[in-house]
Image (cartoon, rainbow, N blue to C red; front, side, top):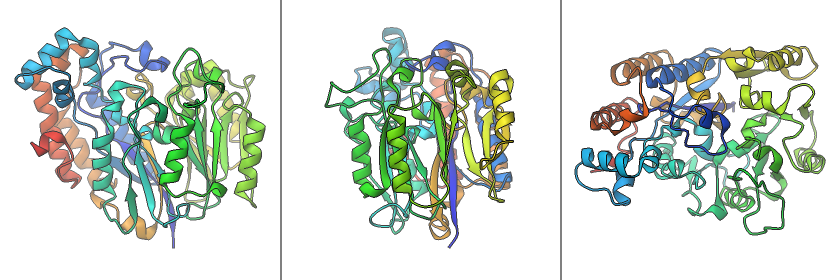
Length: 446
């Protein structure tokens, strides 16, 4: 039986905008209120998906959320026609209104945590949508995310879907952005790493003081229980609180793993030696590579600015690993020099591929933010909704769909226009037909 790691990238939504909603995310705050290009952003994302498919990777696509979220605004007391709701909210509560217009679902690393069948007690692939309670604009996503995941991975013989964790900060869960998996082969049992920022029920433990720690230890434990993971193949690691206070809002901004490689900055974790000893013990026999980047090699500021660690680390058909990096890494002298040296060293990482995802980068998300990884065998892959898989024909269809429905330029002020809401709904209704998802959005269900 063959095994694969499939990347499911989030398709950028028609209301892609820069509202600076993510406190603790430096890039998001720095670009607040800049004019965005939804069309360019969607095409950049599609181009990256197609490029990985052309490299021999198996690539899928996940639909975006419907925005503006008029239902959320109605829950908060705005009433009347859709046009009236938008105008009232924009005038009376502009910050809340902008949150309900966010296109942040494009970063599907936050969509869910996924455990492959090789790790779970019942031998199924398990999905738990992230509750994303720390940011209001993202806390609106889990229900529709669950609908989309169930429509993409619908066969109950192979896939198990859980509800998101309770909507409470004690169980703050940011999905795969704080989760990675180490293994010899994708289809073999691996070690799942859950990285958390704080303990919710023990205030005596270390925690950041400036920016919020979005992932709790208790949430990570709960997801591991839901997925039927054994203590023998789970390691819980605390992220360095000082890094969170410097803008490292998720673990995937400071480390990335793939198969037998963990690529990380030396400041990434708290009590690194203890955590790595546990990983080695649970991983067992076989080569395991911890590739450390020191502060002298790449400063923390350069790592955050370039998103060196928010890159995709993938295994190519010939067994070599490649880093899929944003062009921002290539343009940063220190990071570029480091990566040029890295591929000459005796590690599994042999190639660097650069892609332009600047529309995403300006809102605080690099290549790794854009994808949700799902390890599957060939039987499970065949059970996936095949209309969500990337190939030449689907790439052309989706590009034509973007050309038809997306605006070239969008400002925050445009979001109050009911015409944009109607454009977005028309686009997404057509997309669900292209991807054969059925009715996943509230507006489709009346």
